[in-house]
View 1 (cartoon, rainbow, N blue to C red):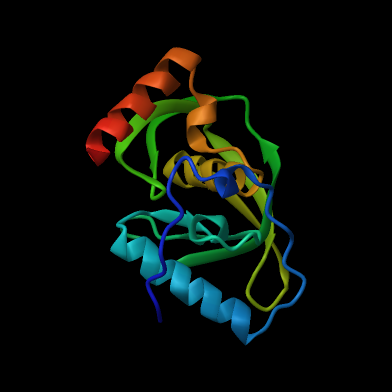
View 2 (view 1 turned 90 degrees about the vertical axis):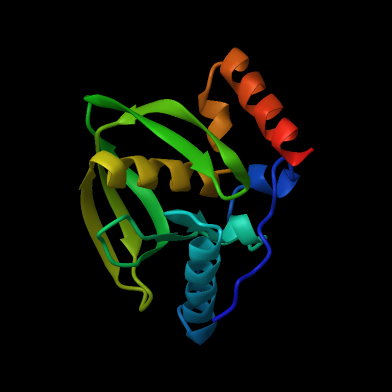
Length: 163
């Protein structure tokens, strides 16, 4: 539908907690379509409504070799004890990434675009993406998961890339 402007780090909106979606209508489906177009143009494999300045709990994912997935009001119901490290970045902070440790498996409860409650078991990259994007919905920007030293290095690299 439309590629929307992406909110860039350090915009304070990236630290706000997104509100739950209460209306499942054409406007929500249009938002998801815009998120998909914006994510692909960025390019990225995941995006949230807050990334485009809309403070709603909506996530769109499109992993390599997988179709587009939309999650409304997602929350992590359970996380396994096993941990994995994966390189992460953000469409709001393009050009930089860093490894972050997260749960290797999660169970996510969410609603689909019709408002029907769903549950998804995820592992590997999909599990990492769920945790990363749900953090964003909770106002936790991905670099907050890094040590202070690594976070400062990532911010310096990003600022240098903007010059």
